[in-house]
Amino acid sequence: MGSLFSPMALACDKAVSNDRIAKVVAKGDVARPTRVSDGFAIEVTEKYWSAADAKQKQELAADVACSVGSNTISFTKDRSVLQTFRDGKAQ
Image 1 (tube, helix red, strand yellow):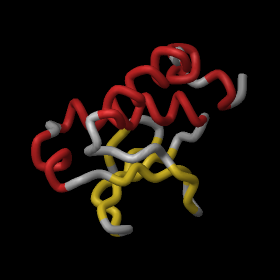
Image 2 (spheres, helix red, strand yellow):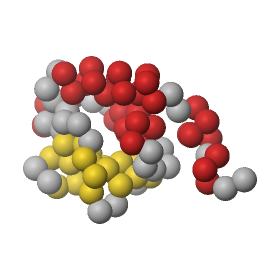
Image 3 (cartoon, one colour):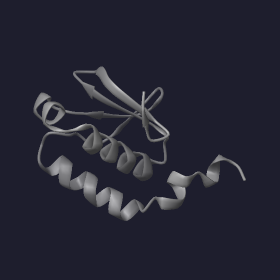
Image 4 (spheres, helix red, strand yellow):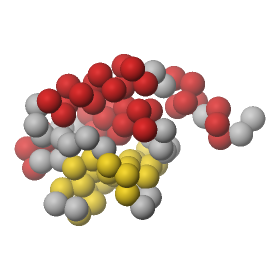
C-alpha cells in the first residue's frame, strides 16, 4: 500500500481537527493555516509560542495536517519559521 494509507491518515478525523483548529484560532493567537512552498504554515503570536508546550504544538500540527491533507506543517512568526513538523515529527 502506498503513502495514501499512512497511519496518520487512518486516524485522521477532519471534522474534529477543524473544530480544534477553529477553537485555537478564535483565541486570536493562531491564524488559519496558509499554503506555502513546502506544505502549510501556521502564523502564531509570541504569546502562543511561549505558552504552548511541545505536545500542544505537535497536536496542533497534526490537526492542521489532517485538515489540509499535507504532511509538512510549519509554525511561523512574522514569516520566520519557528518549527516544522513532517509526518507528525518535529524537525
